[in-house]
Image (tube, rainbow, N blue to C red; front, side, top):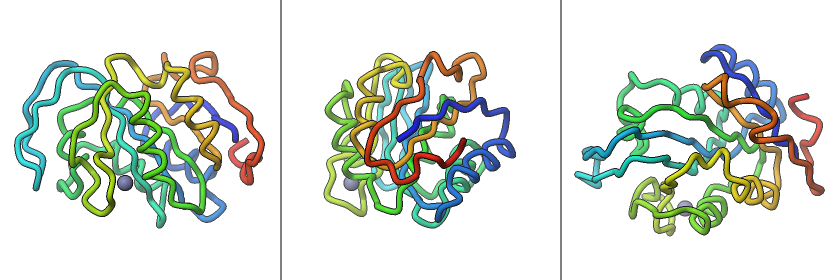
Length: 190
Ligand SMILES: [Zn+2]
């Protein structure tokens, strides 16, 4: 697997870069990283009112029909709220995303591993269609700077790409390219 750090200057660029990364089928799993700068109570669809403490939120999802398009959608704030994450997205900043190109649906396995390194989770969030306790996890510090997250990605399989909206934080030194074995898509995205 390679984690390719990307400087992302907008939706078009995100589409192009992730689109290239996804050219082998366009399917995959992703982590969306949002930053809530202050505590907020948000009404989240079927869950109802949820108090979100300030900090970073990592959401595990999958897009087996179009990974690039999904990530572009998550960047937008003006859209109908369809998923739980859309309600939080409206109030939080887009910090970045990790696209994991893989034909296998890895989101629940990924959620379970992220849960192990997260400070908390938000019960019932984003897991209406599976048996997981949650697909949304809270971190006090930026998880994209957390070496434990890189470790999670390294052991997951697939090819991971970082998509960041913050040019100052998208440098290679921060997330770093990682290399592992069993990487069917390791040449993708170069
Ligand atoms: Zn799940």
